Image 1 (cartoon, helix red, strand yellow):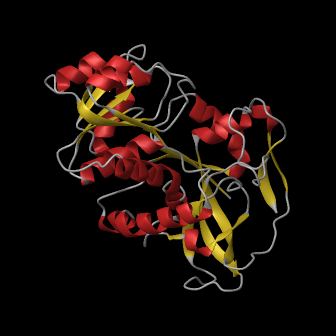
Image 2: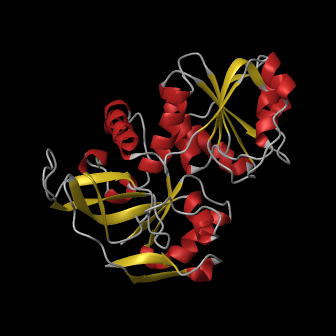
Length: 325
């Protein structure tokens, strides 16, 4: 079958379409014919050699999320049939014509939604929802979302608003932030040279924010603590802005702040199954009702994977880029 391959770590020219093999589904597994796959920052980092695939996952085929049709089922599979429209998360390999996954990891594609739109949902919305749940986000919280115009950022904004929270978003591009009002962002703060704490404190009347979703990393941690409220929960989800950070202990101690890191890719199978089940029950109905919607910046053919990487690296996008077969 065809797949996007990373010939070796490097720049755009190491990406190519090639032939790879795929095993048959085993006990409890299904094979999904992939219609489309979402592009994520992790794919860019993997291509550059800065985010290797977990053990046991092919290192040369990127892709963490997909949508498609079930085309084969293994033994002991229940509740899934050939032809079902499904979407899901994988630790790698989604940018191929097919993937083999455990049937309990599957999530149904919302009715009336295209498979290309569905491919933009799993990584962004599951990451955001899981982080908000871990942070105990609830009605009345003030949630600060960094990189609010990103795929995870636009998802987090919608989900936090659905939980009854007020959402403040940061970003480096004022025009992109302005568009985020379409997805419920209450207030936007342009992070000039990575600085945003003073502006956030002003917007909250000096009270600070109760939840932070840090989709940047690096120096954003220290700034986040500066504008955190007493007892705030800070969730670290990315390192695109830097893999190291300064933790001002005085602020963390005096404000009794909880700082926690989280990632989906390296979780064990049972954890991923639990995530898929929880997401299907708590979040998926929001797409059917119209309360939630995927934010897709562009859909490109898989043959244009280099252009997709270039586009994402340019920071010109709002929401997700999807690659289709």
